[in-house]
Length: 291
Ligand SMILES: O=C(O)CCC(=O)C(=O)O
Image (cartoon, rainbow, N blue to C red; front, side, top):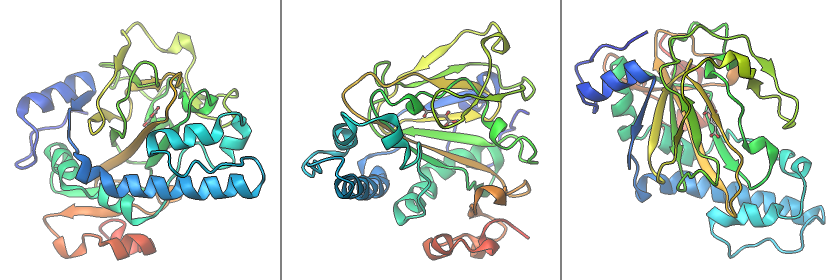
């Protein structure tokens, strides 16, 4: 499905054209340090909780408290196993204020509005990805996002992937196959080598489109269609490739409550129903979507 120009939003006609044609769009430097600070704080809090847990279990003797976010988790898990890492989840979906600030950031919502207009639902499917060096679950196999919500009448969901450090070939940036977003939902399987059962496609299902690597600077957003083929490579660096992937759709689509509660992020028709931080923290269903 191609998006028509809506009356508002921050993107140019050219950018819309590119998204419709290629299935993705890179918005360089969309977020600045001030935008990224609340979610960074949420990430740091979670890392501190993990350090405490590892310390209490006797798995580490140094909580690496002086280390910056970029390195701390890498140093904590240096010498531990994939299983130790996976005890804390391969990606996180914490309902803490930092993520509400990010999910409702006007720069992101303005971009999404260009595609779907001003009735915008922030999906419950969002992930913080601490891609720790050499942990197998960090590398995500080729897949289409829609394989995670195959039966939902949510079509197409827009993924907004944002790097919180510079994403490079070495630390495992995103790779995509442009112009594959018009393919049907391919039959996927659950992979069995990372310990997380990612949905995955076989090599022979990938077709002949070229693969494009997308190294990007911290604060850059990559928007893509939920049928676009994409993956990411292992992290062979000495630091964590931090990223988040957020998702948005129009409010007349399935809010996918089986994944948690999302929230009404913007509404020209019902501005009084737009979720506040308190609504979101409580997971109030009346703010999950229009009745
Ligand atoms: O961040 C990654 O490495 C993979 C992200 C991804 O597959 C997604 O956002 O759907």
